[in-house]
Image 1 (cartoon, one colour):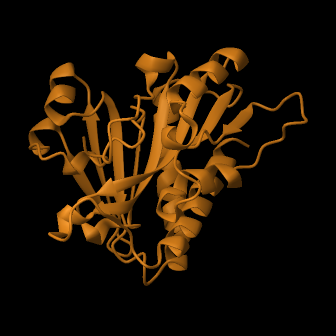
Image 2 (tube, helix red, strand yellow; image 1 turned 180 degrees about the vertical axis):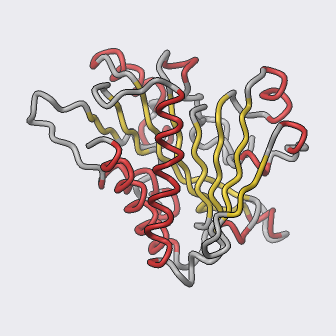
Length: 251
């Protein structure tokens, strides 16, 4: 399974895939609504809305992208929340998927750590968890999240994760978000269990950044996962941007 829906190998145009020029720094936003079981089976992705922001100049103009990224991500996340009837009063669980010991897999962990919560206030509706990886804990993230959803009457789950790409030019330069959930480690192994509305019975949103590429995509030595040398700066910047968006939406 692929992490980025536009790398699934299918003809996306016939499924309604469209790309919009955002007029700044060559940024584009592609969107696709997988609204039927037939489309889902053809693409290998769950039903839902998918958005992909592409920022090809992010490495050289990182700070200059800040305001535009915040605005674009917020606009589309608010659309996804509205489409799923999520209200500010609802209890939401934010989940940082990934291995905190591996830099390229830290986008989810760092993002969740930066989201502001007020746990000592009775009015607090925001909860956070970093379940780590199955290889480190022996527990599937989906099972852990399910227990929390039930125990705290959670209305929605928002997942953050580092993704894999087949295109080296997209490392740290794309952001995919959807209301279809995700399967942890789906592009790298078979351990993950899908985290979505079907498995948790609540809406699940996923925000991911491609930070890894398999060496076979580069015709190099197989079974090696690579990232770019400025991965730390990318993860730091993009996790801060996404956390800022979340804090703004949840005020």
